[in-house]
Image (cartoon, rainbow over all chains, first blue to last red):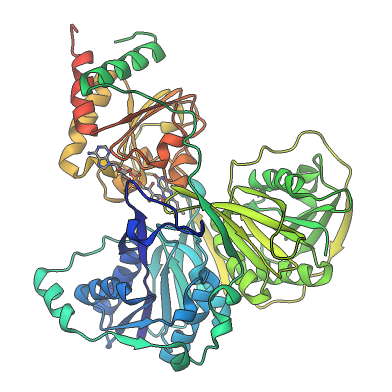
Length: 266
Length: 329
Ligand SMILES: Cc1cc2nc3c(=O)[nH]c(=O)nc-3n(C[C@H](O)[C@H](O)[C@H](O)COP(=O)(O)OP(=O)(O)OC[C@H]3O[C@@H](n4cnc5c(N)ncnc54)[C@H](O)[C@@H]3O)c2cc1C
């Protein structure tokens, strides 16, 4: 029994950042890396299933990315993932979420898990498409924005609730194996202990190339993608009037705005 | 390749507002009268939805009958895929919604169509490569701190998931032609069971609140919630929050503003403290007339919808603000 969890090392921007000379991304020096917030929840969901299972379950974390993605995978190992796989090749550079999904699908074919979890979206680019596209390449059933899951490892079906606009839940049943994209709040992700973080540092991360997975270079990168970044730019800041001054002055102005708006009720 | 297909979304028998917004998006992308706009109704009783989509700018309604009454990703993917194969449209517009999260990427991946999600701007522009006009779609990146323009070299059909509340629904009515399309049979691997309304036992109605003080992850820890409860009471505001605060259980879910929470429908003044301005949060409050954002990060995207902004530490601002609302002040 195996559960595969897709994780991404995302990037947030430093306060003062610059766009790269080619205008198509942010200069790498200004990127702050971290594990995608949603992936904490999908890993936790897999670990919970493993811990509740009657028979052994292996949780495998997989990331497509260069070496710095090891950091995300080590965090997964520290929290209790049994194995970690990282796939990288220069040719993957410039891939959109669909090309990444093609790689994840190849890993799933190799590993044959009973379930694949991915985050609903990633906190940097929020495509909300990697997991479901992975399912398409595998021809597996798929469901997105799963906020509650009832699944017994090895079961032919799972019951889940997807979270709709307005917070209404929609309960559905799905055949397994399946790809589910996991929503924030489905569980409470654990923290790794210092000891397990140290232990994880010594655990191996399996690194796979495109060749190992039988993927041709043109099927990833820009040529294997369904869109191409043409330009990235900093949008106009909008119409906000910035309230300057020291804290006292700013607070006094805010108090005035409040009093004006509520008709001086205070 | 011509023609624009708009995939109308419906839930529990009702058309969703995004469907009409997409008609306006289609108008914005249209290259001329030859680019016909067809609204596609995929449902168990598509004819019931027809009157709601006979709006200005719609040339045709395509009805596709499927057996599922409620969301069925396999049936949707298969029906839209078959329709694209039959009609070869240049553009297919889908709402960027919870339903489309569940099938749009699979549709695009299988068909190899051009594809982008959460698009808020679209149009044809001259391309350097070919000299031909190509479609350019704009979306956000890095937590909405940058705008990203994407294009779709070599793609004849492009599927775009369009952000809600971006295009205004069209005005006027139309008399579109109606075409029936027969979708190929599909064995669905999912089945719908029930809808569950979540109630959290808190009696506050955020949709009715006129003045909301809303706190986000910037407040740091649960122990700090109380001082904002006190501050809200002192200034006469209803305390609201962003999702992480509700997910952590620090405030009831009914206080959460945003796409999966409440819409601040009656709100006139919204003070956001320590909220970054994720698009799903904005979905519940960006319409408010007066938004004041307090955030330590001058680049936070909340400032792009705010009327007033304060770059600073929310605790310091909160403490100083409190002194203006002490009894007798
Ligand atoms: C399908 C879906 C539905 C969702 N629905 C909702 C929803 O309904 N509502 C919602 O809110 N989110 C929703 N989200 C989540 C959303 O994407 C964001 O994750 C969330 O809104 C972030 O909340 P935040 O702004 O409080 O936290 P963060 O993004 O972490 O922002 C915290 C902010 O606090 C600032 N800050 C930190 N410390 C201080 C300080 N001392 N002083 C001043 N500022 C400080 C930081 O600069 C930062 O901007 C949804 C996501 C998905 C995928």
